[in-house]
Length: 182
Image (cartoon, rainbow, N blue to C red; front, top):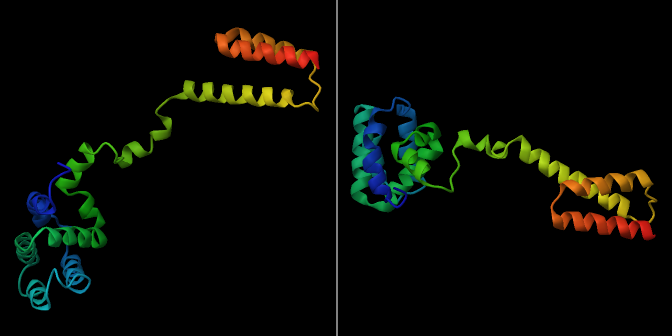
């Protein structure tokens, strides 16, 4: 779905846009004005006047505008989406083509999941990382040559090596041997 063109997306979104009550006359006029003034190659003055005619109902003007943009081409449809996002972000985020893109794009994060990203590993992971950081801080503190480590701290480090793997155990024991020789 992510490789669909803007004109195909617009074709998919037309029913939703026509029936969306959040697209008021004011917002539709802002979109038309943006397409006319910021991107005059998308809508000429004559076309903008036609789509801003107050005698025509908003839904009919919007439907005509969408058909016109689809006939004009890909770039015009892209500029419509840009104008829609600038003027009615809530409508833009609820488009059917956006929902399908969000669910199929692995790099884009949904707002609900964004809140839980830091919590996905759980408390055990946090405690393990904290323990490793505290252990490294303790080793760095007692490794400093100016600090004279008491014998009880060496015992704690020696006993803490029992619960670790072979490589970490060897590092802690070699550290204790080096500090005891000083």
